[in-house]
Length: 276
Image (tube, rainbow, N blue to C red; front, side, top):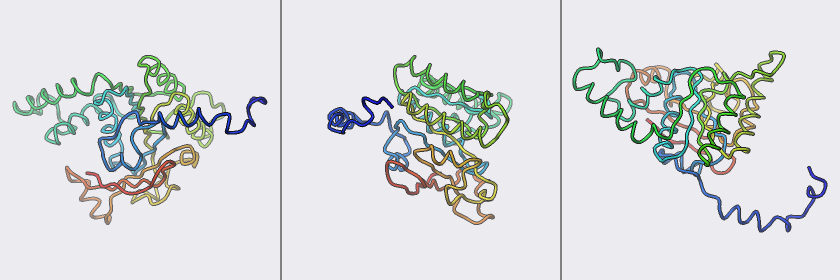
């Protein structure tokens, strides 16, 4: 802290801070109305979405980012596990209402009607989403992610929406001695700092501990490191409200009911949102 300013009374800053509050508006809104109401729009915050494997984390993140891009908000998706084309397939399947599957989009797998459906849906994506979204697939270490967000912010002159899939696999290249806990703590601190420095909105996926695969009920379920909980502004879990047998049947459905539970919200209420 600067010795000349660290103990100044609020009367020195009150007008400046009140003006900042008057100008405070979200950079956009989530198209999922229930979730948008809880988090009060897309804001410069770190939101973590956690769930067991196969619960729909990547599909939900893809929808959030596609919706932001369709509203013209600069968006970047760091996909550390899946390919860019796989993420595109998820988007096309959703835009088409599920008539196109995520797999089997090759010419040999589709009949004439399916190929026409794919062309029409691709044109929709090309027009409404593609101009504002970047998908960075493959390995991206922590420094590369932070640098890319800074460059995109400078290029567009606007705060950006960032998606990360997922936190626990982000490499930390300069950590020295390999220490998983120290690496994860560095990831949490750096991503939270990126939000403050660039004013971006980050939606980051997280694994959950194995004992919580059947349903996360508290913040201790976040995989690997409590620093993710502390660094985040909001934490949501995707759960299936059902028995193990019912969960298995749900996974076999094309349309699967799930519950998104917002267990931490630094700036508003917590609560549940029903999704399909």
